[in-house]
Each structure stands twice: as structure tokens, then as C-alpha cells.
Image (cartoon, rainbow, N blue to C red):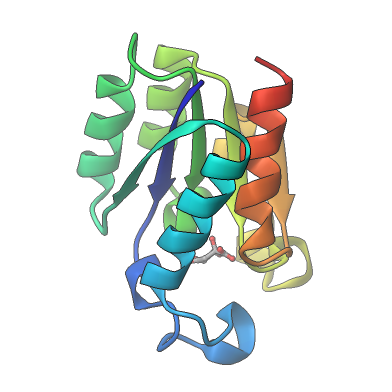
Length: 142
Ligand code: DQA
């Protein structure tokens, strides 16, 4: 099982960025957590982070025929990006959307997700554990 994990803009600032919402653990701690979770689940994982919408579209397109699943936290692009939604629909790779915070209990503009329209499942509000749950879901439903 080969899974591509994509993190969107500003997630590289974890630990510094709004710790009251996103916690005080760093982005590299998140990457370590994801790698350890994948190992436990016997899945092969590739990690990608970008602050640029077009780069995220490019990496989704290049996943076609290569990866069996995608875990994506599109961050702010969740709420704005039809391009990322269309890329996920184009490759039709089973996808789980993850958010560290509970977007449904935050500002109204965060309560709509374009990416949800292409995702098999959305997990939010579980912090780092949400990524593990997403990997487990993809492994169980391959
Ligand atoms: C986020 C929630 C988004 O609304 C926000 O723009 C982010 C992070 C989360 O993980 O909780 O950057 O996706």
C-alpha cells in the first residue's frame, strides 16, 4: 500500500503557528509521527508539503498510477481550491482529508470544504492522530 501524504500552506509553521489551535509540536514532529504510523500499519508513505496551490495540483497529478491512496490536509486551500478538488477527481485515487483542528466548530468560512467533495472520508479535530486514522482507513479499505 503506497500512500502519498500532502500538507498544504502554513503547516510547515506548526509549533510556531497559533499553538492554542494547532498545538506546540513542530512540523518535523508531525512528519516523524506520520512515518511511525505508516510503519506500524505496514504502509509505504511519501510526504509532501507546499505553500503553493499549483505545486499541490502537480503532485496530485503525478500520483496517478503510482500511489494507492492520498491523505491530504489542504489547509487554507480546503476552503478555496476548486483546482485541488478537480485534481483529486481527475486521478480518482482513494483520498482521506485531514484537519488538525475541528473546522466545523471554527469560523463560518472554514466550515465549507471543496476537497470533501472528492474525499472518501474527512477527519478533523484529532490533531496528529487524525493522520494515523486516515492511513488506517486507507489500509483497511484498499
Ligand atoms: C487546517 C484548518 C484550515 O482551516 C486552516 O486554514 C489550516 C489548517 C487544520 O489542519 O486544522 O491551515 O487545515
